[in-house]
Amino acid sequence: MRADPPLDLMTEQNIAAQITKAGEVISELNKTSTEVESLKGQLKEDMSENDRTEIQNRLIDMYKEALCQEDFSDEVATSLVVFLVRCTEDDIVVLLAKRGKSIVVFCLCNTVKALDNLRLMIVSGFMRDVFTDIISLEAHTPTAVDVHLRDDDITSRRSCLTAQQDKGWLFDRQLLILKL
Image 1 (cartoon, one colour):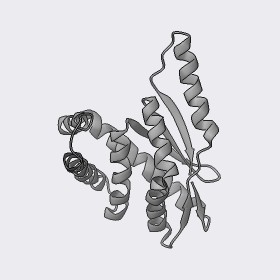
Image 2: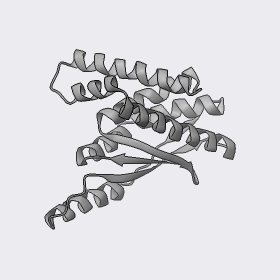
Image 3: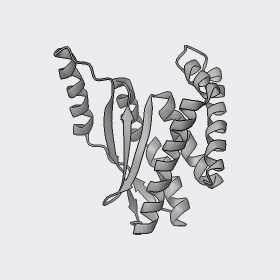
Image 4: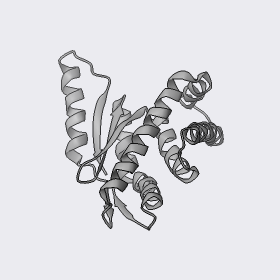
């Protein structure tokens, strides 16, 4: 992601650290909470949009509580949890964020569908909106954010999966690196 106006080094490092920490907190919660595990399982089922929204809202509340217990500000937690719930629903794990000419977010997609859903989150502007909120809060000024994903990144990961499956190999995960 790239910010306009550009962010100073400390702000970029702080934002990257918060994204990484949030991914770690939610990943741990997803592994240890039987209630979260149950809600994730329910999201895989066919259900009405109202029921799905209710489950998503319960996850949002649980994720926000977990982040706030780790000293995230209420505003940053609010912005991050919507993204993290969607990632959880789509079998995407936020592994790491780091600074490098911009902020780079490393995501693990557990399925081809997850890879496609991540792409949709980017092209729809959803991720731009989430990260614009977070960056504007941390920079203390309105900031425009551009989230980049090259079509080659998706194509190469999809073709890798297809080629390996044709050879009788099966890889069930692909790491996708997003340059924010």
